[in-house]
Length: 304
Ligand code: 13P
Ligand code: SF4
View: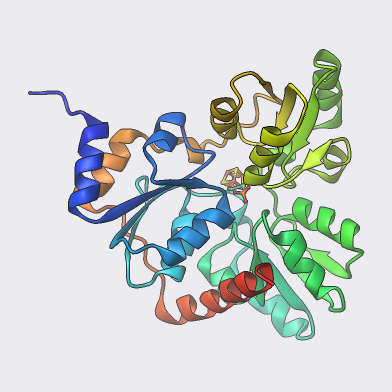
């Protein structure tokens, strides 16, 4: 049997079916390379909301494909690996949040996009790491609850002096980084700038020269005069950093910075997703409507 040229087949199927491939920066390099659009959570959600394609193949994790479906309910949204999920998104369930809301009706709920559609539907506004500061600073005069990432929440609370409770979720990858290992890497590469994602713990964020979403970290290394960087986020982003800056050096802060679920998707999975139109993501109509409201408030406040 002839060997399948997955890249050529993906291109052919994509065109034949009017599909678009979206990939997060944490995907494997070869998956990033075949994407029509590559981005962080914010950029990809904007593309998902505006694409003219009939099919969105989302190379990422479940909450990202679900967000695309909320934003484009009439399109076929596919997640190439059915079990690709996010441990942080699973650290909050809608029943507990519903109960919190009943007991605290005065509190505005700010929801990190790394969450399920049901949780978004119970929230007043969504944020991504790329717009959290801009959005949340417009809620300064309210009592707030931030779900589910306690680390990004703690960073925002301190920076903007917010009256905000935090849910106890976290990203297992970013949360695992500790001060001792950061000090060790900084000693090893003394001329480097330390750049980190705000899903890291606050004590790590405070050691950094720059903090931002994956896209903003990429923008930063592109414009910085420094020649060396210690990268404190998931290792997938280094592929783009190197492509854009062949003369700069990038050191991953820790080997722990690899998201198992983000790395599940292969070119074969993308091919099968297009060929068999799998795995379809669906969101119940009433949940879609309410989750969309929280996302639309986010876009409105981001674009102000
Ligand atoms: P951003 O894409 O917003 O940087 O978020 C990182 C992340 O954890 C995605 O799962
Ligand atoms: Fe979830 Fe962390 Fe993986 Fe992002 S990197 S998908 S937050 S587990």
